[in-house]
Amino acid sequence: NPRIGVLALQGDVREHLAALSEADAQPVTVRRPAELADVDAIVIPGGESTTMSHLLGVLDLYDPLRERLAAGMPAYGSCAGMIMLATTILDTRPDARHLDALDITVRRNAFGRQVASFETDLQFHGVTDSAGDPPMRAVFIRAPWVESITPDVQVLARVPEGPAKDRIVAVRQNNVLATSFHPEVTGDRRVHRYFVEMVRESGV
Ligand code: GLN
Image (tube, rainbow, N blue to C red; front, side, top):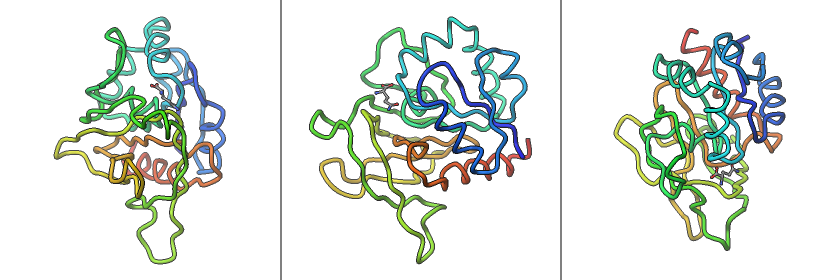
């Protein structure tokens, strides 16, 4: 089984470790460069992106992580993790660093005050396509949305209804996957299985 690191600086690390185990991966925490060097892929959890950005610098993980991503290491980011992976971030702090692994523009805390946190059922391309597949329960917590993408980026899910209808909330570009929502906090392991399959297919 692929050895998948969970960036363990801050955020919902435990939930991703549990979800990856259930999705037949071998999860390990990553807090030091030596631990990063030892994984096949990385998950960047939900949490607070500016805090994570700060800690990446403090722990000397920023440059090595950027280098691994530039070299094609598979990565999955949920919520704050999506923000960290993006090339362009709207509404962040000017000193916040990010990883430039996904050609998207994300808007932090994009869903207004009224719906800052909410749940919905949505369709996820590659996961809920067959007749009889249940929709995916998506939990949004002060989530970003994807404001724009480049042609290399594949849209996997959009908000199905309500004021943010059709906003992009899951994307993939080559070996990099990101969701605005938190599959790690539900019992549904299909997104983690999808990512573990991506890692297997990448041949690492
Ligand atoms: N609002 C957070 C940020 O900007 C993300 C929230 C989350 O990961 N649940 O980093």
